[in-house]
Amino acid sequence: AQSVTQLGSHVSVSEGALVLLRCNYSSSVPPYLFWYVQYPNQGLQLLLKYTTGATLVKGINGFEAEFKKSETSFHLTKPSAHMSDAAEYFCAVSDGSGGYQKVTFGTGTKLQVIP
Amino acid sequence: DARVTQTPRHKVTEMGQEVTMRCQPILGHNTVFWYRQTMMQGLELLAYFRNRAPLDDSGMPKDRFSAEMPDATLATLKIQPSEPRDSAVYFCASGLDRSYEQYFGPGTRLTVT
Image 1 (spheres, rainbow over the protein chains, first blue to last red):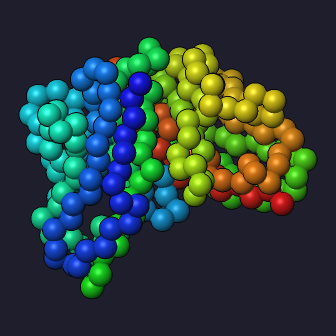
Image 2: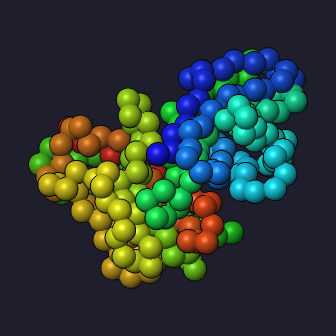
């Protein structure tokens, strides 16, 4: 069964500082991994995804994530935080279990950016 | 700019009333998902459709919830009768079955008093 754990429900960083949001997954087969972002009063929007190939994945708004199989991790990073990055971020995993593209979402990490 | 649309955006109703939420998936998408988001439970999958057929509704309370796709451009989620514990934001998402990406609508914020 697939599952995902996000470490830290709230993360605060200063504007211009490194953003690091942690995600660990559990899957019985090679997974597909995703990061979504949710701004207040909006739906989720795909930031980036890993399916196969290069383990360092670049997404929108300067975010990237690295798939580390040995650590079962898919942490999200951004070198320099911007005020507009304040939002909730969801890590998600899908391994095709259940016969379809069921995606399991983590509990989310709220990112606060301090001016 | 193709988007998933949901109506209504906000709904306040009294306990016992029927609630219908509608979703228009992105044209050409053949998968539709319904999710419920609450502070306590996070994001929960309620139902999944592929080519308008319901393939998984195991996350949905069967006694009061129902989900349908009358046609490829409309998905509905009904609650009858509604209860205060149903208060949440309900999201619809659509995608293509050869891709794992899901495109979310803006959600319907439901308040049951």
